[in-house]
Length: 411
Image 1 (cartoon, one colour):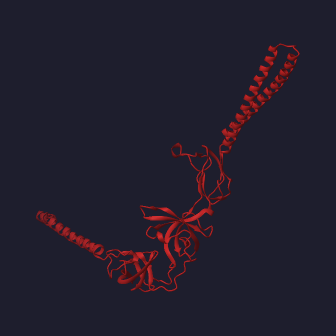
Image 2 (cartoon, helix red, strand yellow):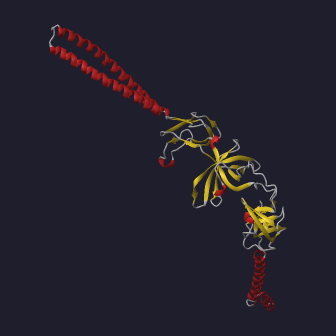
Image 3 (cartoon, one colour):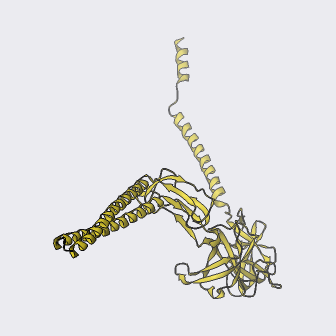
């Protein structure tokens, strides 16, 4: 019986030399599987071809392309010549604001009011001082009238030798003294009147009015805030109530490349197109060419008058401007133009020969083309490209014939 138990105990004993060998085998198998998975992932993400994302544009027949009647195209913004951030002349606490964004105001209309307690008290004090000065002046004038009569009487009595010359001299001195006091009192009345005028101006300064008629485009202050004509209080004091724009003073300002400024003249007709309304053509004309250049951008600023007043035109809108020939009234397409027009950024090369990349399915085809003239931001292609074909804008240097591409969401 004891022999059988010992045999059973031997069967239950764990072989310490065999277990590590099996564990090492399992670890090696797992490591091989992990390496295979990592290699497959690297091949999938790195080894596969990466398609560049590109923007595209459609080639259009030159006779149908918009703006071909223009001698130059440029971009700019709508600006206002009359625009003001209205503030107060004095520092004070805002008690009332009567404007809101989009509100149309007239010249002199009240925009806001400041706390006028001190100003009213100062005006009342100045008026009281004026009243006192006038009373004093009236008293002195009455005394002077009596002194004038006394002096006249003393002169008559002296002529009759009824009084001494000393009495007449005293009467004359009294009269001259009161004349001087009356002059001083009159001056004090004038000073008091000026004080009343100053106090009235200070009170009027608590009322903020519109300097000209226009539309409120920004409301900057609320009741209870402090406002000052200069920055004060570490940035906790407002410097303006709101901003008003005179919509009748709107114009366009564009930056023209200095290489093409010779195509622009004062009074030249233009056709403007707002980015917000691409189908709306607005006539205009060149007001002036600002006689200075921007050294950093190599551009010259040009001011353009709008021929149409419309509520859709607001300041800071983006706009494209086509400068027309002097005798042209609208940017009509030229009747006959060979080839097609594509954006200039789609063309590689210069002169008469160039290269474009044409989209063919999910790949591109490198195409040699013959180039024509530059039309604003476009380039004329005389041969090698057909109307309606889609070309790649700003093709990367690494792009080659037959490469796969991915189209941007908006082309």
